[in-house]
Image (cartoon, rainbow, N blue to C red; front, top):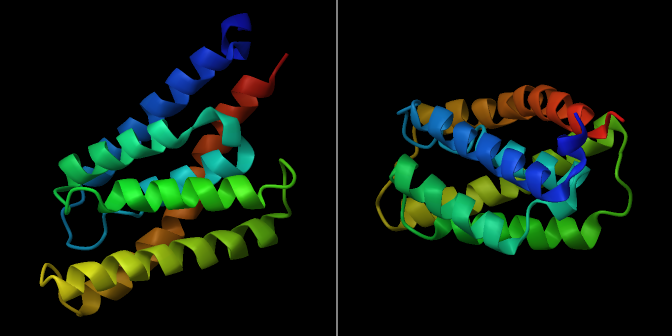
Length: 160
């Protein structure tokens, strides 16, 4: 159990699990639903352990997300790096009240989702239909799924 206290091992485990979330979300082929696991994952990683995922990690996760989710190359990387910058600036303590954490996540995720959706809509790769509401519901649901999974992982790291 001592090996999990090593920061390099923690970074590798976090990156591996985030890639697994990308692969899992890629199994959902509904148009516009491709942020429902990875965006809450990135948010929760940067909220609980901001040092575990740097700018290059965010860039590569975004690139992997673009490739596997068949999105426009570069949008996810830009979104994740923006989120990393905003979370690095705004993280003042390692633990927040659950309600505040959810509100902050909804603010970030909905604004980033609407920006990405607007770009896809403008470029003609997406349309406004019922999948938009399904995507929003999945994005909110993804927070609770990822919160449960990442808390399990971080508690593993925090055990002495």
